Length: 126
Length: 372
Image (cartoon, rainbow over all chains, first blue to last red):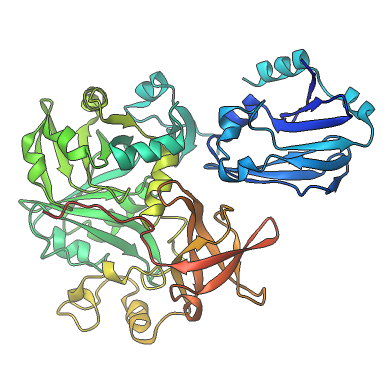
């Protein structure tokens, strides 16, 4: 299992060996949002600073956004979500990924929660 | 503003079914069940959905003068409403603004049955008592719950409990027993589908709801899907698409003003704001409610500003969201009459960015009322 980190705003980031990280939202986040009907993805090549809004999510109930917790450049997006946004509901941690960023500094990930800490946070929210 | 939320007689059933409960008009109401809004919406269009709308206000107006009296508050023909028929109506204020929208049924024997919106019911009952007090009795039916069974299978399902409901046509009603419980049943609803609204004594509501939910075609449906269903059907939500700042004409509800109550009718005017409404019928209005579709896939939600091609703000979205059966985002809002023609290309500002929209006829999906 590759190294997966979580934010307190319910995004996940999975670090690859090449120093890029795949970004998505957690199962808890998709449950809170409900049926997702639209996803606005960033463009490949777009640069983000830590804390920027990188993607928008619209569910039948509300709009949400993905804030990227680290700085980097988008190298790949999950274009399948444009036609099938429900993938985020069905498989938030796998098929429902949003985009992959080449990190400026993989060390930034160290400030994020690991899975145990995140599950604890969700437990407190539930 | 922290008054405890009221419960409908079906509260425990909602919780048992796993509903997510939210505050709505002072009540704890189910916004969705485990099925989720999208599937609940589709299920209602495909089969049948059961809605708890017990938060709405039910009122009887009793007395020989009730119909004439009610006509002093609504621009609608009540006096000639046949026994066993229901009609859509609007309470207007002195400026022609809409105080609430409502359904009026003639039960015969000088009894009118009225259903009003939950958020307005206290104000509506006070309004009725103030203006009709001397002319008829105003009786709030606080001991009754209200269910809606909506969808193409609704008639077959309800006919298993009372075969005669199959004979009712759209906007007809009857008083009959369902599962041994005396109910008021009307063939109407708020989804654009065929279906029924069922007024049932509060202490029998859960029994009837469980009986209906036991039918294989029926799922419990929450307020979330109720909203997307009514939006696709082009039906107004009071407090959003119409309110005291909009008249029936601005709200594109001229159809709801009965011919006999229009300026050239036999009982023209005679309701609050009739002069304003008459002038608007003759001269037109500055702003108008329209439906719109979205060129992109971005849902455009209530509150979004509408601009023309030059980026000038000309209106506002009053309802909007994804239309699951339409297969894309739809909405309604107010725009200048000059921009209200179907096909007009406009923009809505979503997160500060212009999204291309196009004025469109409503309903967005065909209505499937049973007209016999």
